[in-house]
Length: 304
Ligand SMILES: [Zn+2]
Image (cartoon, protein in one colour):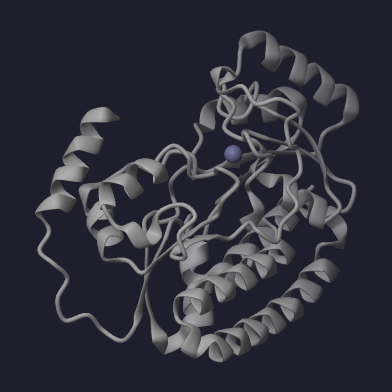
Protein backbone atom coordinates (compact mmCIF):
# COMPACT_ATOMS: atom_id res chain seq x y z
CA UNK A 1 0.00 0.00 0.00
CA UNK A 2 2.71 2.43 1.06
CA UNK A 3 4.91 1.62 -1.91
CA UNK A 4 1.94 1.87 -4.31
CA UNK A 5 1.21 5.28 -2.90
CA UNK A 6 4.79 6.47 -3.43
CA UNK A 7 4.74 5.26 -7.03
CA UNK A 8 1.40 6.95 -7.62
CA UNK A 9 2.57 10.22 -6.05
CA UNK A 10 5.74 10.24 -8.09
CA UNK A 11 3.76 9.75 -11.28
CA UNK A 12 1.37 12.56 -10.52
CA UNK A 13 4.33 14.80 -9.67
CA UNK A 14 5.93 14.12 -13.06
CA UNK A 15 2.81 15.12 -14.96
CA UNK A 16 3.07 18.12 -17.20
CA UNK A 17 0.79 21.03 -16.43
CA UNK A 18 -2.60 20.47 -18.01
CA UNK A 19 -2.79 22.22 -21.33
CA UNK A 20 -5.59 22.66 -23.83
CA UNK A 21 -8.22 22.48 -21.14
CA UNK A 22 -11.64 22.00 -22.69
CA UNK A 23 -14.83 23.71 -21.83
CA UNK A 24 -16.12 20.40 -20.53
CA UNK A 25 -16.17 19.47 -16.88
CA UNK A 26 -13.77 16.55 -16.34
CA UNK A 27 -15.51 14.02 -14.14
CA UNK A 28 -13.94 10.89 -12.64
CA UNK A 29 -16.35 8.40 -11.05
CA UNK A 30 -15.26 5.57 -8.78
CA UNK A 31 -17.75 3.10 -10.31
CA UNK A 32 -19.45 2.84 -13.74
CA UNK A 33 -22.93 3.38 -12.22
CA UNK A 34 -21.95 6.91 -11.23
CA UNK A 35 -20.24 7.46 -14.59
CA UNK A 36 -23.46 6.56 -16.44
CA UNK A 37 -25.53 8.85 -14.20
CA UNK A 38 -23.02 11.68 -14.73
CA UNK A 39 -23.32 11.28 -18.51
CA UNK A 40 -27.12 11.39 -18.22
CA UNK A 41 -26.99 14.54 -16.10
CA UNK A 42 -24.04 16.28 -17.76
CA UNK A 43 -24.72 15.43 -21.41
CA UNK A 44 -22.27 17.16 -23.76
CA UNK A 45 -20.90 19.35 -20.99
CA UNK A 46 -19.00 16.59 -19.21
CA UNK A 47 -16.20 14.20 -20.02
CA UNK A 48 -16.63 11.18 -17.78
CA UNK A 49 -14.36 8.27 -16.88
CA UNK A 50 -14.67 5.55 -14.25
CA UNK A 51 -11.93 4.01 -12.12
CA UNK A 52 -13.62 0.61 -11.69
CA UNK A 53 -14.83 -1.31 -14.74
CA UNK A 54 -17.62 -3.02 -12.78
CA UNK A 55 -16.15 -6.47 -12.14
CA UNK A 56 -14.27 -5.42 -9.00
CA UNK A 57 -15.14 -5.42 -5.32
CA UNK A 58 -16.11 -1.81 -4.56
CA UNK A 59 -14.21 -2.09 -1.27
CA UNK A 60 -10.97 -3.13 -2.98
CA UNK A 61 -10.65 -1.63 -6.46
CA UNK A 62 -7.01 -2.34 -7.45
CA UNK A 63 -5.10 0.94 -7.77
CA UNK A 64 -3.36 1.68 -11.05
CA UNK A 65 -0.88 4.51 -11.71
CA UNK A 66 -3.24 5.77 -14.45
CA UNK A 67 -5.86 6.50 -11.76
CA UNK A 68 -3.66 9.18 -10.17
CA UNK A 69 -3.21 10.77 -13.58
CA UNK A 70 -6.98 10.74 -14.25
CA UNK A 71 -7.64 12.30 -10.86
CA UNK A 72 -4.90 14.86 -11.30
CA UNK A 73 -6.77 16.19 -14.36
CA UNK A 74 -10.27 15.99 -12.84
CA UNK A 75 -12.57 18.86 -11.96
CA UNK A 76 -14.91 16.54 -10.08
CA UNK A 77 -14.65 13.13 -8.40
CA UNK A 78 -17.89 11.20 -7.84
CA UNK A 79 -17.95 8.58 -5.11
CA UNK A 80 -20.65 6.33 -3.67
CA UNK A 81 -19.70 7.50 -0.17
CA UNK A 82 -20.48 5.95 3.23
CA UNK A 83 -16.80 4.90 3.20
CA UNK A 84 -17.46 2.30 0.45
CA UNK A 85 -14.24 3.40 -1.24
CA UNK A 86 -12.11 3.90 1.88
CA UNK A 87 -9.61 1.19 0.90
CA UNK A 88 -8.42 3.01 -2.20
CA UNK A 89 -9.86 6.49 -2.75
CA UNK A 90 -8.12 8.47 0.04
CA UNK A 91 -4.70 7.20 -1.13
CA UNK A 92 -5.50 8.02 -4.74
CA UNK A 93 -6.74 11.52 -3.87
CA UNK A 94 -3.52 12.17 -2.00
CA UNK A 95 -1.48 10.86 -4.92
CA UNK A 96 -3.44 13.01 -7.38
CA UNK A 97 -2.09 16.24 -5.85
CA UNK A 98 -5.27 17.91 -7.07
CA UNK A 99 -6.58 20.37 -4.46
CA UNK A 100 -9.99 20.74 -6.19
CA UNK A 101 -11.16 17.21 -5.46
CA UNK A 102 -9.95 16.63 -1.93
CA UNK A 103 -12.54 15.76 0.75
CA UNK A 104 -14.71 18.79 1.64
CA UNK A 105 -13.65 20.66 -1.51
CA UNK A 106 -16.30 21.53 -4.14
CA UNK A 107 -15.00 18.91 -6.58
CA UNK A 108 -15.49 16.07 -4.07
CA UNK A 109 -19.03 14.80 -4.70
CA UNK A 110 -20.36 12.25 -2.24
CA UNK A 111 -23.38 10.61 -3.90
CA UNK A 112 -24.83 9.23 -0.66
CA UNK A 113 -25.80 12.61 0.81
CA UNK A 114 -29.54 12.11 0.23
CA UNK A 115 -29.57 8.51 1.48
CA UNK A 116 -30.30 7.35 5.02
CA UNK A 117 -28.12 4.24 5.39
CA UNK A 118 -29.25 0.99 6.97
CA UNK A 119 -27.16 -1.21 9.29
CA UNK A 120 -25.34 1.72 10.90
CA UNK A 121 -23.07 0.17 13.55
CA UNK A 122 -23.43 1.47 17.08
CA UNK A 123 -19.69 1.38 17.49
CA UNK A 124 -16.94 1.69 14.93
CA UNK A 125 -13.99 -0.58 15.35
CA UNK A 126 -11.94 -1.08 12.22
CA UNK A 127 -9.77 -3.63 14.01
CA UNK A 128 -12.74 -5.98 13.57
CA UNK A 129 -12.23 -5.59 9.86
CA UNK A 130 -15.60 -4.00 9.26
CA UNK A 131 -15.91 -2.65 5.72
CA UNK A 132 -19.12 -0.76 6.60
CA UNK A 133 -18.15 1.75 9.31
CA UNK A 134 -20.91 4.22 8.28
CA UNK A 135 -23.62 1.64 7.64
CA UNK A 136 -24.33 -0.39 4.52
CA UNK A 137 -22.99 1.52 1.49
CA UNK A 138 -24.37 -0.66 -1.33
CA UNK A 139 -27.00 1.89 -2.28
CA UNK A 140 -26.45 1.61 -6.04
CA UNK A 141 -28.32 -1.72 -6.14
CA UNK A 142 -31.64 -0.02 -5.32
CA UNK A 143 -32.96 2.12 -8.21
CA UNK A 144 -34.95 4.36 -5.86
CA UNK A 145 -31.71 5.23 -4.08
CA UNK A 146 -30.21 5.54 -7.56
CA UNK A 147 -32.51 8.54 -8.06
CA UNK A 148 -31.09 10.12 -4.90
CA UNK A 149 -27.59 9.56 -6.29
CA UNK A 150 -28.61 11.31 -9.53
CA UNK A 151 -29.77 14.32 -7.51
CA UNK A 152 -26.45 14.44 -5.65
CA UNK A 153 -24.61 14.33 -8.98
CA UNK A 154 -26.71 17.21 -10.36
CA UNK A 155 -25.88 19.23 -7.23
CA UNK A 156 -22.19 18.38 -7.56
CA UNK A 157 -21.94 19.29 -11.24
CA UNK A 158 -23.84 22.54 -10.62
CA UNK A 159 -21.54 23.48 -7.74
CA UNK A 160 -18.55 23.14 -10.07
CA UNK A 161 -20.19 24.66 -13.16
CA UNK A 162 -22.89 27.05 -11.87
CA UNK A 163 -23.59 28.55 -15.29
CA UNK A 164 -25.09 25.25 -16.43
CA UNK A 165 -26.93 24.47 -13.21
CA UNK A 166 -30.33 24.70 -14.92
CA UNK A 167 -29.30 22.21 -17.61
CA UNK A 168 -28.01 19.72 -15.02
CA UNK A 169 -31.17 20.06 -12.97
CA UNK A 170 -33.38 19.53 -15.99
CA UNK A 171 -31.38 16.53 -17.27
CA UNK A 172 -31.46 14.95 -13.79
CA UNK A 173 -35.24 15.42 -13.61
CA UNK A 174 -35.82 13.80 -16.99
CA UNK A 175 -33.47 10.90 -16.26
CA UNK A 176 -35.16 10.35 -12.90
CA UNK A 177 -38.55 10.35 -14.66
CA UNK A 178 -37.20 7.59 -16.91
CA UNK A 179 -36.00 5.71 -13.83
CA UNK A 180 -39.43 6.17 -12.20
CA UNK A 181 -41.10 4.49 -15.17
CA UNK A 182 -38.59 1.62 -15.04
CA UNK A 183 -39.05 1.27 -11.27
CA UNK A 184 -42.83 1.00 -11.64
CA UNK A 185 -42.39 -1.77 -14.22
CA UNK A 186 -39.78 -3.62 -12.10
CA UNK A 187 -41.98 -3.50 -9.03
CA UNK A 188 -44.84 -5.04 -10.96
CA UNK A 189 -42.68 -7.76 -12.52
CA UNK A 190 -40.88 -8.50 -9.27
CA UNK A 191 -44.04 -9.51 -7.38
CA UNK A 192 -42.90 -13.19 -7.26
CA UNK A 193 -39.79 -12.08 -5.32
CA UNK A 194 -41.92 -10.86 -2.45
CA UNK A 195 -41.16 -12.75 0.78
CA UNK A 196 -38.31 -14.80 -0.72
CA UNK A 197 -35.42 -15.29 1.71
CA UNK A 198 -31.86 -14.85 0.54
CA UNK A 199 -28.34 -15.35 1.81
CA UNK A 200 -25.58 -13.47 0.00
CA UNK A 201 -21.81 -13.66 0.28
CA UNK A 202 -21.54 -10.03 1.46
CA UNK A 203 -24.47 -7.73 2.34
CA UNK A 204 -24.49 -6.10 -1.13
CA UNK A 205 -28.12 -7.05 -1.72
CA UNK A 206 -29.64 -5.37 1.33
CA UNK A 207 -31.24 -2.37 -0.38
CA UNK A 208 -32.26 -4.39 -3.44
CA UNK A 209 -33.93 -6.95 -1.19
CA UNK A 210 -35.78 -4.30 0.82
CA UNK A 211 -37.00 -2.61 -2.36
CA UNK A 212 -38.50 -5.78 -3.80
CA UNK A 213 -39.90 -7.23 -0.59
CA UNK A 214 -37.26 -9.94 -0.20
CA UNK A 215 -35.88 -11.02 3.17
CA UNK A 216 -32.09 -10.78 3.69
CA UNK A 217 -31.44 -13.78 5.92
CA UNK A 218 -27.69 -13.66 6.45
CA UNK A 219 -24.28 -13.69 4.81
CA UNK A 220 -21.61 -16.27 4.05
CA UNK A 221 -19.03 -13.77 5.33
CA UNK A 222 -18.82 -13.62 9.09
CA UNK A 223 -19.07 -9.82 8.98
CA UNK A 224 -18.54 -7.36 6.10
CA UNK A 225 -14.98 -7.98 4.95
CA UNK A 226 -14.34 -10.84 7.39
CA UNK A 227 -13.92 -14.33 5.90
CA UNK A 228 -16.31 -17.08 7.00
CA UNK A 229 -15.28 -19.68 9.57
CA UNK A 230 -16.35 -23.35 9.42
CA UNK A 231 -18.55 -22.94 12.50
CA UNK A 232 -20.27 -19.88 11.02
CA UNK A 233 -21.03 -21.82 7.83
CA UNK A 234 -22.35 -24.78 9.82
CA UNK A 235 -24.65 -22.50 11.88
CA UNK A 236 -25.79 -20.63 8.79
CA UNK A 237 -26.63 -23.83 6.90
CA UNK A 238 -28.59 -25.19 9.82
CA UNK A 239 -30.62 -21.98 10.19
CA UNK A 240 -31.16 -21.81 6.43
CA UNK A 241 -32.57 -25.35 6.33
CA UNK A 242 -34.81 -24.65 9.29
CA UNK A 243 -36.14 -21.40 7.76
CA UNK A 244 -36.34 -22.69 4.18
CA UNK A 245 -34.14 -20.02 2.63
CA UNK A 246 -34.87 -19.79 -1.09
CA UNK A 247 -31.75 -18.28 -2.60
CA UNK A 248 -27.99 -18.01 -2.21
CA UNK A 249 -26.60 -15.00 -4.06
CA UNK A 250 -22.98 -15.12 -5.16
CA UNK A 251 -21.86 -11.63 -6.05
CA UNK A 252 -19.62 -12.25 -9.03
CA UNK A 253 -16.40 -10.96 -7.47
CA UNK A 254 -16.57 -13.51 -4.62
CA UNK A 255 -15.35 -17.12 -4.89
CA UNK A 256 -17.90 -19.53 -6.36
CA UNK A 257 -17.12 -22.73 -4.45
CA UNK A 258 -18.40 -21.88 -1.01
CA UNK A 259 -21.63 -20.26 -2.24
CA UNK A 260 -22.28 -23.36 -4.36
CA UNK A 261 -21.70 -25.65 -1.40
CA UNK A 262 -23.99 -23.65 0.88
CA UNK A 263 -26.73 -23.72 -1.76
CA UNK A 264 -26.32 -27.49 -2.29
CA UNK A 265 -26.25 -28.25 1.42
CA UNK A 266 -29.45 -26.31 2.09
CA UNK A 267 -31.49 -26.88 -1.06
CA UNK A 268 -31.43 -23.15 -1.91
CA UNK A 269 -31.09 -21.97 -5.47
CA UNK A 270 -27.76 -20.33 -6.44
CA UNK A 271 -27.95 -16.95 -8.20
CA UNK A 272 -24.93 -15.06 -9.54
CA UNK A 273 -25.29 -11.30 -9.72
CA UNK A 274 -23.14 -8.31 -10.63
CA UNK A 275 -23.01 -5.51 -8.06
CA UNK A 276 -22.19 -2.69 -10.47
CA UNK A 277 -22.76 -1.57 -14.04
CA UNK A 278 -20.26 -3.50 -16.20
CA UNK A 279 -20.23 -6.55 -13.90
CA UNK A 280 -21.76 -8.60 -16.74
CA UNK A 281 -21.89 -7.65 -20.45
CA UNK A 282 -25.69 -7.17 -20.26
CA UNK A 283 -25.34 -4.48 -17.56
CA UNK A 284 -24.28 -1.77 -20.00
CA UNK A 285 -25.75 1.14 -18.09
CA UNK A 286 -27.58 1.73 -14.81
CA UNK A 287 -31.04 0.80 -16.09
CA UNK A 288 -29.87 -2.39 -17.83
CA UNK A 289 -27.90 -3.32 -14.69
CA UNK A 290 -30.94 -3.18 -12.41
CA UNK A 291 -33.01 -4.86 -15.10
CA UNK A 292 -30.49 -7.73 -15.31
CA UNK A 293 -30.59 -8.25 -11.54
CA UNK A 294 -34.40 -8.21 -11.36
CA UNK A 295 -34.66 -10.68 -14.27
CA UNK A 296 -31.94 -13.00 -13.00
CA UNK A 297 -33.50 -13.12 -9.56
CA UNK A 298 -36.94 -13.79 -11.09
CA UNK A 299 -35.56 -16.59 -13.25
CA UNK A 300 -34.09 -18.27 -10.16
CA UNK A 301 -37.36 -17.96 -8.21
CA UNK A 302 -39.65 -19.01 -11.03
CA UNK A 303 -37.38 -21.80 -12.21
CA UNK A 304 -38.41 -23.72 -9.11
ZN1 LIG B 1 -19.79 -3.86 1.45
